[in-house]
Structure formats: C-alpha cells, structure tokens
Amino acid sequence: MLYQTLEYLAEALCYAFFIYQWIIIIAILLTWVTPDPYNPIVQWINRITHPLWNWCYQWLPPSLRFFNAYASLLVVVFLHALIPATLRSINLVLQQMVSYSALPMQIAGHAIQGVGIVTYSLLWFAIIILAVWFIMTLVSPSPNNPLVRVAYTLADPIISPIQRYLPRTQVDLSPLVGILIFYLISSYLLAPFIGYGAMLSAPVHICV
Image (cartoon, rainbow, N blue to C red):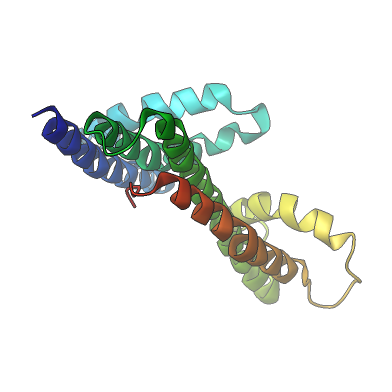
C-alpha cells in the first residue's frame, strides 16, 4: 500500500508542477497586458504565484530582481525534475529494488538533470532574445518602443563582451556569434551533462 501511495504521490506531483508552470507563464503574460486587478481569475492567479515571486525577489541580486517571475518559473522546473523522481527512488529502495547506498547517487542524478534542464531553458531563452535583437537591428526600430528597450536590456549583457572581439561591420554580427556559442554549449556540453544525470538516475526517469 505504501508503495502505491508513493507512486501516486509522485505522479500527482508531476502533474501539479506541470500545471503550476503554466499558471506562472499565464501570470507572466498577464503582466504584459495590465489586466483588471479586480478580476477574480486574475486575483486567484496572483495569490498562487506571487508568494514564490516574492521569495525569488528576496534571493536574487538587486540587478536581477526584475526577473523574479522568470526565476520562479525556473525554480518550479527544477523541482518538477527533482521531487517526483526522488519519491520514486525512495519507493524503489523501500521495495528493495535499489540499495540504500545507491539512493544518494540517484538523487544527485535527478538534481543534475534538473540543473541541466534549467540551464538549457536559459540558453534557449538567450538564443531567442539574441535572434529577436538581431532582427530588430536590421529594421532599425524606434528606441522608445518598450519592446525594443526590453530586448536591449536582455541582450546587451550578452552582446557587449562579444562586440569587443569582433571587427566593426555595417551589420552587428555579435547576436549571431552569441547564438552560435550558446548552441554549441547546449549541444556539446549541456547534453552530455544531462545524459550523465540520467545515467545516475536509472532506472528512474524524471518528469518532463
């Protein structure tokens, strides 16, 4: 009975974290459109997301506190990978299918995969931002546009160091170089890192 309970709990948490991720995404999108604060749906979404946002705000450095909502999403992504898989590993130990000595390595594998997925998400977010910024530089949008200011705020810390090592050209190639660098890191460093975590986690698979 205990074995089934742990498995049901792990499965329920998989779905719960998945749903909560999408609620956070919806909450982030709502901040872009200034919704009616008295709307009951908006109030409910704020009640279940803002406590985590505030916690992330307290722990982030002052220069990154603007991204507390996005950081909360990454926290949930990490927990989505770690907690259900850890419960399943404990369940296997209780069923004597995995030894107690193997449990710490399995949990470490789940954590490695969680960190890898979070890093992978950050890299691809950066790739998208750089791609958007490169397209913007080709059409010369108004610097007063709020979307342009947000894109520049996100892209500038990445492209500024790259620009120091590139010759000046009519078209700024630093976003493309950044995209290439992040893609290579994702493919040749991060993918093996996640694979190593999966090897340690076997036979338990994380929720995706």
